[in-house]
Amino acid sequence: MDSIYTYFDYRQYLNDLIQEKRLRNKMLSLRAIAARIGINSGTLVRILNNERNISKKLIPAFASFLRLKNKESQYFSILVEFNQARDNEKRRNLYDQLIIFRNEYRKPVNPDAYEFYEQWYYTVIRELLQFFPFTDDFDGLAKMVQPEITATQAKKAIAVLQRIGFIKKTGDGYFKPDQSFITTGKTWRSVAIEIFQKTMMEIGVTALDRFPRETRDFSTMTMRFSNEGYKKVRQILKRTREEIAHIEEEDRAANQVFQINMQVFPVSKEWPRGVE
Image (cartoon, rainbow, N blue to C red; front, side, top):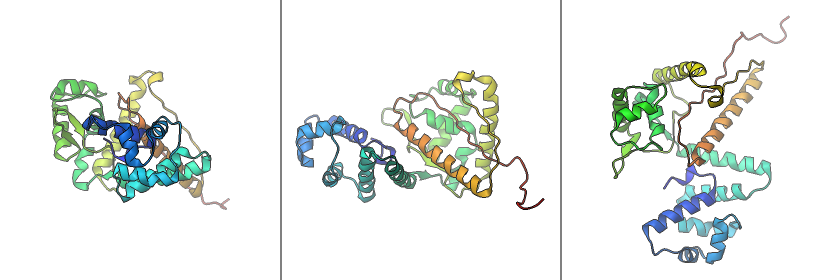
Protein backbone atom coordinates (compact mmCIF):
# COMPACT_ATOMS: atom_id res chain seq x y z
CA MET A 1 0.00 0.00 0.00
CA ASP A 2 1.46 3.34 -1.09
CA SER A 3 1.73 6.24 1.36
CA ILE A 4 -1.27 8.58 1.52
CA TYR A 5 1.07 11.36 0.35
CA THR A 6 1.26 9.74 -3.09
CA TYR A 7 -2.50 10.22 -3.58
CA PHE A 8 -4.39 13.22 -4.95
CA ASP A 9 -7.75 11.40 -4.93
CA TYR A 10 -9.05 10.39 -1.51
CA ARG A 11 -11.56 7.96 -3.02
CA GLN A 12 -8.78 6.08 -4.79
CA TYR A 13 -6.88 5.97 -1.50
CA LEU A 14 -9.94 4.65 0.36
CA ASN A 15 -10.64 2.03 -2.30
CA ASP A 16 -7.01 0.85 -2.34
CA LEU A 17 -6.76 0.70 1.45
CA ILE A 18 -10.09 -1.10 1.89
CA GLN A 19 -9.12 -3.59 -0.80
CA GLU A 20 -5.83 -4.28 1.01
CA LYS A 21 -7.60 -4.71 4.37
CA ARG A 22 -10.09 -7.16 2.85
CA LEU A 23 -7.28 -9.13 1.22
CA ARG A 24 -5.73 -9.56 4.66
CA ASN A 25 -9.06 -10.33 6.30
CA LYS A 26 -11.49 -12.18 4.05
CA MET A 27 -14.23 -11.82 6.67
CA LEU A 28 -14.07 -8.00 6.70
CA SER A 29 -17.19 -6.63 5.01
CA LEU A 30 -18.09 -3.13 3.86
CA ARG A 31 -20.85 -3.19 6.44
CA ALA A 32 -18.30 -3.81 9.21
CA ILE A 33 -16.03 -1.05 7.86
CA ALA A 34 -18.96 1.38 7.67
CA ALA A 35 -19.93 0.54 11.26
CA ARG A 36 -16.40 1.36 12.45
CA ILE A 37 -16.62 4.74 10.73
CA GLY A 38 -20.13 5.36 12.07
CA ILE A 39 -22.12 5.34 8.84
CA ASN A 40 -24.26 2.78 7.04
CA SER A 41 -22.83 0.60 4.29
CA GLY A 42 -24.93 2.27 1.59
CA THR A 43 -23.41 5.65 2.40
CA LEU A 44 -19.90 4.17 2.30
CA VAL A 45 -20.54 2.59 -1.10
CA ARG A 46 -21.83 5.90 -2.49
CA ILE A 47 -18.74 7.72 -1.18
CA LEU A 48 -16.41 5.14 -2.73
CA ASN A 49 -18.30 5.35 -6.04
CA ASN A 50 -18.13 9.17 -6.16
CA GLU A 51 -21.89 9.47 -5.67
CA ARG A 52 -21.64 11.21 -2.30
CA ASN A 53 -19.11 13.44 -0.56
CA ILE A 54 -17.56 13.12 2.87
CA SER A 55 -18.86 15.82 5.24
CA LYS A 56 -16.43 17.74 7.44
CA LYS A 57 -17.94 16.08 10.52
CA LEU A 58 -17.07 12.63 9.13
CA ILE A 59 -13.42 13.36 8.30
CA PRO A 60 -12.13 12.60 11.84
CA ALA A 61 -14.05 9.29 11.85
CA PHE A 62 -12.48 8.28 8.55
CA ALA A 63 -9.02 9.36 9.77
CA SER A 64 -9.49 7.27 12.90
CA PHE A 65 -10.51 4.19 10.91
CA LEU A 66 -7.55 4.71 8.56
CA ARG A 67 -5.25 5.00 11.62
CA LEU A 68 -3.69 8.15 10.24
CA LYS A 69 -1.08 10.04 12.24
CA ASN A 70 -1.40 13.77 12.88
CA LYS A 71 0.16 15.05 9.62
CA GLU A 72 -1.47 12.27 7.61
CA SER A 73 -4.84 13.29 9.05
CA GLN A 74 -4.20 16.89 8.03
CA TYR A 75 -3.28 15.75 4.53
CA PHE A 76 -6.43 13.60 4.32
CA SER A 77 -8.62 16.50 5.45
CA ILE A 78 -7.15 18.82 2.81
CA LEU A 79 -7.36 16.04 0.23
CA VAL A 80 -11.09 15.60 0.87
CA GLU A 81 -11.67 19.33 0.61
CA PHE A 82 -9.55 19.53 -2.58
CA ASN A 83 -11.46 16.71 -4.31
CA GLN A 84 -14.84 18.15 -3.37
CA ALA A 85 -14.12 21.85 -4.06
CA ARG A 86 -15.77 23.43 -7.09
CA ASP A 87 -14.08 26.83 -7.13
CA ASN A 88 -10.90 26.75 -9.25
CA GLU A 89 -9.04 29.29 -7.09
CA LYS A 90 -9.84 27.31 -3.95
CA ARG A 91 -8.69 24.09 -5.62
CA ARG A 92 -5.42 25.79 -6.60
CA ASN A 93 -4.78 26.88 -3.00
CA LEU A 94 -5.64 23.45 -1.63
CA TYR A 95 -3.42 21.80 -4.23
CA ASP A 96 -0.50 23.99 -3.13
CA GLN A 97 -1.09 22.86 0.47
CA LEU A 98 -1.02 19.22 -0.62
CA ILE A 99 2.26 19.80 -2.44
CA ILE A 100 3.82 21.18 0.75
CA PHE A 101 2.93 17.98 2.61
CA ARG A 102 4.13 15.83 -0.26
CA ASN A 103 7.46 17.66 -0.47
CA GLU A 104 8.00 17.02 3.25
CA TYR A 105 7.38 13.32 2.62
CA ARG A 106 9.87 13.13 -0.23
CA LYS A 107 13.04 11.31 0.68
CA PRO A 108 16.04 13.62 0.18
CA VAL A 109 19.04 11.91 -1.33
CA ASN A 110 21.76 11.75 1.31
CA PRO A 111 25.02 13.25 -0.03
CA ASP A 112 26.62 9.86 0.71
CA ALA A 113 24.22 8.36 -1.84
CA TYR A 114 25.01 10.78 -4.68
CA GLU A 115 26.60 7.77 -6.35
CA PHE A 116 23.02 7.31 -7.60
CA TYR A 117 23.71 10.07 -10.15
CA GLU A 118 27.11 8.89 -11.31
CA GLN A 119 25.60 6.85 -14.16
CA TRP A 120 22.54 8.09 -16.03
CA TYR A 121 21.01 4.62 -16.30
CA TYR A 122 20.83 4.12 -12.50
CA THR A 123 17.82 6.45 -12.37
CA VAL A 124 16.27 4.80 -15.43
CA ILE A 125 16.58 1.31 -13.95
CA ARG A 126 15.12 2.44 -10.63
CA GLU A 127 12.07 3.77 -12.47
CA LEU A 128 11.86 0.63 -14.61
CA LEU A 129 11.64 -1.50 -11.48
CA GLN A 130 8.38 0.26 -10.61
CA PHE A 131 6.67 -1.94 -13.22
CA PHE A 132 9.24 -4.23 -14.87
CA PRO A 133 9.32 -7.70 -13.22
CA PHE A 134 13.02 -8.23 -12.55
CA THR A 135 14.67 -10.98 -10.53
CA ASP A 136 18.03 -11.84 -12.11
CA ASP A 137 17.76 -11.48 -15.92
CA PHE A 138 20.35 -8.70 -16.31
CA ASP A 139 20.45 -9.10 -20.08
CA GLY A 140 16.67 -8.58 -20.32
CA LEU A 141 16.87 -5.57 -17.97
CA ALA A 142 19.70 -4.02 -20.02
CA LYS A 143 17.68 -4.37 -23.23
CA MET A 144 14.79 -2.39 -21.65
CA VAL A 145 17.01 0.70 -21.31
CA GLN A 146 17.32 3.23 -24.15
CA PRO A 147 20.03 3.79 -25.28
CA GLU A 148 20.70 0.12 -24.55
CA ILE A 149 23.30 -0.73 -21.93
CA THR A 150 25.20 -3.97 -21.24
CA ALA A 151 24.19 -6.74 -18.85
CA THR A 152 27.32 -5.95 -16.83
CA GLN A 153 26.21 -2.34 -16.44
CA ALA A 154 22.72 -3.45 -15.44
CA LYS A 155 24.19 -5.81 -12.83
CA LYS A 156 26.32 -3.02 -11.36
CA ALA A 157 23.31 -0.70 -11.30
CA ILE A 158 21.28 -3.20 -9.27
CA ALA A 159 24.19 -3.66 -6.85
CA VAL A 160 24.60 0.10 -6.37
CA LEU A 161 20.87 0.77 -5.99
CA GLN A 162 20.54 -2.01 -3.44
CA ARG A 163 23.61 -0.93 -1.48
CA ILE A 164 22.51 2.72 -1.14
CA GLY A 165 18.98 1.63 -0.17
CA PHE A 166 17.05 2.81 -3.24
CA ILE A 167 15.72 -0.66 -4.12
CA LYS A 168 15.04 -3.81 -2.14
CA LYS A 169 14.31 -7.46 -2.86
CA THR A 170 10.75 -8.43 -2.06
CA GLY A 171 9.62 -11.70 -0.51
CA ASP A 172 8.76 -13.14 -3.94
CA GLY A 173 12.26 -12.43 -5.28
CA TYR A 174 11.57 -9.27 -7.30
CA PHE A 175 13.50 -6.01 -6.97
CA LYS A 176 11.38 -2.92 -6.29
CA PRO A 177 12.11 0.73 -5.38
CA ASP A 178 12.17 1.27 -1.63
CA GLN A 179 10.60 4.74 -1.88
CA SER A 180 7.91 6.12 -4.18
CA PHE A 181 9.81 9.31 -4.96
CA ILE A 182 13.05 11.01 -4.00
CA THR A 183 14.56 14.46 -4.41
CA THR A 184 17.99 16.05 -4.36
CA GLY A 185 16.57 18.85 -2.21
CA LYS A 186 16.89 22.58 -2.82
CA THR A 187 20.51 23.07 -1.77
CA TRP A 188 22.36 20.21 -3.43
CA ARG A 189 25.98 20.71 -4.39
CA SER A 190 27.46 17.80 -6.29
CA VAL A 191 29.62 17.30 -9.35
CA ALA A 192 27.89 13.92 -9.84
CA ILE A 193 24.47 15.60 -10.21
CA GLU A 194 25.85 18.20 -12.61
CA ILE A 195 27.39 15.46 -14.75
CA PHE A 196 24.10 13.53 -14.62
CA GLN A 197 22.15 16.56 -15.84
CA LYS A 198 24.66 17.22 -18.62
CA THR A 199 24.53 13.56 -19.72
CA MET A 200 20.72 13.56 -19.80
CA MET A 201 20.74 16.70 -21.94
CA GLU A 202 23.20 15.04 -24.32
CA ILE A 203 20.97 11.97 -24.54
CA GLY A 204 18.10 14.34 -25.28
CA VAL A 205 19.98 15.69 -28.29
CA THR A 206 20.48 12.19 -29.70
CA ALA A 207 16.80 11.41 -29.09
CA LEU A 208 15.93 13.83 -31.90
CA ASP A 209 17.36 11.31 -34.35
CA ARG A 210 16.63 8.09 -32.48
CA PHE A 211 12.86 8.50 -32.04
CA PRO A 212 10.09 9.46 -34.50
CA ARG A 213 8.32 12.77 -33.88
CA GLU A 214 5.14 11.13 -32.52
CA THR A 215 7.06 9.44 -29.66
CA ARG A 216 8.88 12.53 -28.42
CA ASP A 217 8.11 16.19 -27.67
CA PHE A 218 10.71 18.91 -28.24
CA SER A 219 10.11 22.64 -28.29
CA THR A 220 12.27 25.74 -27.94
CA MET A 221 11.46 29.35 -27.05
CA THR A 222 13.72 32.41 -27.10
CA MET A 223 12.17 35.19 -24.99
CA ARG A 224 13.09 38.38 -23.10
CA PHE A 225 12.44 38.93 -19.36
CA SER A 226 13.41 41.17 -16.49
CA ASN A 227 14.78 39.57 -13.33
CA GLU A 228 11.26 39.57 -11.88
CA GLY A 229 9.83 38.02 -15.03
CA TYR A 230 12.52 35.34 -14.95
CA LYS A 231 11.62 34.50 -11.33
CA LYS A 232 7.97 34.07 -12.34
CA VAL A 233 9.01 31.70 -15.14
CA ARG A 234 11.00 29.60 -12.66
CA GLN A 235 7.96 29.40 -10.37
CA ILE A 236 5.80 28.22 -13.26
CA LEU A 237 8.36 25.53 -14.13
CA LYS A 238 8.44 24.47 -10.46
CA ARG A 239 4.65 24.07 -10.39
CA THR A 240 4.81 22.23 -13.72
CA ARG A 241 7.32 19.73 -12.30
CA GLU A 242 5.03 19.16 -9.32
CA GLU A 243 1.99 18.63 -11.53
CA ILE A 244 3.92 16.19 -13.74
CA ALA A 245 4.97 14.31 -10.61
CA HIS A 246 1.27 14.22 -9.64
CA ILE A 247 0.41 12.65 -13.01
CA GLU A 248 3.11 10.02 -12.51
CA GLU A 249 1.87 9.12 -9.04
CA GLU A 250 -1.72 8.74 -10.28
CA ASP A 251 -0.74 6.71 -13.36
CA ARG A 252 -1.21 3.14 -12.16
CA ALA A 253 -0.81 1.79 -15.71
CA ALA A 254 2.71 3.21 -16.32
CA ASN A 255 4.75 0.89 -18.57
CA GLN A 256 7.58 3.06 -19.93
CA VAL A 257 10.21 5.44 -18.53
CA PHE A 258 10.56 8.96 -19.94
CA GLN A 259 13.18 11.66 -19.37
CA ILE A 260 11.92 15.25 -19.07
CA ASN A 261 14.50 18.04 -19.32
CA MET A 262 13.44 21.59 -18.49
CA GLN A 263 15.98 24.29 -19.25
CA VAL A 264 16.01 28.05 -18.83
CA PHE A 265 19.30 29.89 -19.29
CA PRO A 266 20.54 33.25 -20.62
CA VAL A 267 21.61 33.55 -24.24
CA SER A 268 22.56 37.21 -23.98
CA LYS A 269 24.32 39.51 -21.56
CA GLU A 270 22.27 41.62 -19.17
CA TRP A 271 21.73 45.20 -20.35
CA PRO A 272 21.23 47.74 -17.53
CA ARG A 273 17.93 49.58 -18.00
CA GLY A 274 18.25 53.31 -18.66
CA VAL A 275 21.52 52.99 -20.52
CA GLU A 276 21.34 54.44 -24.01
